[in-house]
Length: 429
Image 1 (cartoon, rainbow, N blue to C red):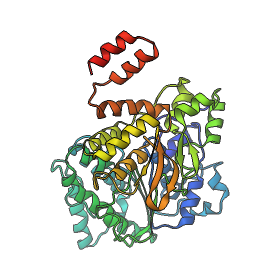
Image 2 (cartoon, one colour; image 1 turned 180 degrees about the vertical axis):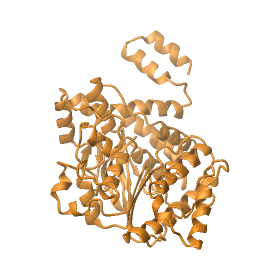
Image 3 (cartoon, rainbow, N blue to C red; image 1 turned 120 degrees about the vertical axis):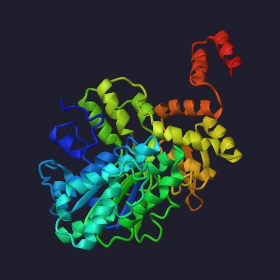
Image 4 (spheres, one colour; image 1 turned 30 degrees about the horizontal axis):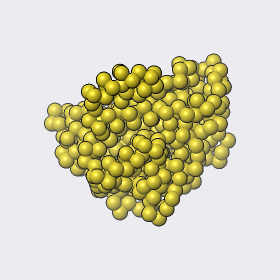
């Protein structure tokens, strides 16, 4: 029986080591057929973004021979097999650009330096002007003591120029979790210091570079106000509301059925209630992280804990208006809410209730149940499953300024019919 790929986010590693594999390679065909210059896909964390981006990069990378890792996949039977390993490819992930300012900056620089090292040969025999630019950017990338992103705005675009000059082919750029540094900088109170360098780095490679073939970015949300995507022609934004790419992140019902059957389990109502309930586009989706852990441990318990998103949401709840607080209470009481939802702008950029609900949806804490009035961005949102419902208890404790675990204790005393203990706990609130 194949091993279950918990924590495996590298596509080549997954395939070489013969882990259980859910084939999402049709995503490559859709990406090529859409021909969007820059594509942004927003999905919750733990929904397979990094693995899919690794898959895309492995397929296109000109310095690889990827036939063996794509053997017996859907894409191998398509006309697009001729695009395999044809393009210089940059793949960077900001998934670990977290915690304090120094860690965020170091991760960003090391990710870029890794790609520079990968293509070190394209920097040979530079003319004196290009050499000077190379040395300037390199010195700033390797400066881990200045604690800023100064001087790296062209770190990706310069590499793209050299790759284009070397291969005479435009460059594929894949940026995983592009918004994590923005989110973490905001949470850690260094947003103003870092946003310019981050925006410049992405803007110069995605908008102004003539060496770009196609770019694909993933993240939780769209960073709208910063000068990354402004005036960018043919920006293709795909949120959880859109049908495009909807089947490639998370597992659909058939995929869950097959996976659980493989490991002697069944997709019953209890599993659906615990891990299902998400709607992406028009497809019912299950959290892949939770399903894989359930298949491994065979315990029907919560596995999805989104620490970063939890911190971000808690920080933003502090700045919410009275309208949001009234709506939050309706959501908790009814399990659903009919309201305006904006998934296209981050709450920390524009503090509005629709943007905050958009953050809940983008982060996986809520799902869109149905559209009520698309023109007015009016939807019914709901808590997707029991696993996420547990997380809402923690958020509600924070919202009510309770101590951690108080709600769980109150509920437990009610369920176990211990009125005296319930009253004692209630008095302590």
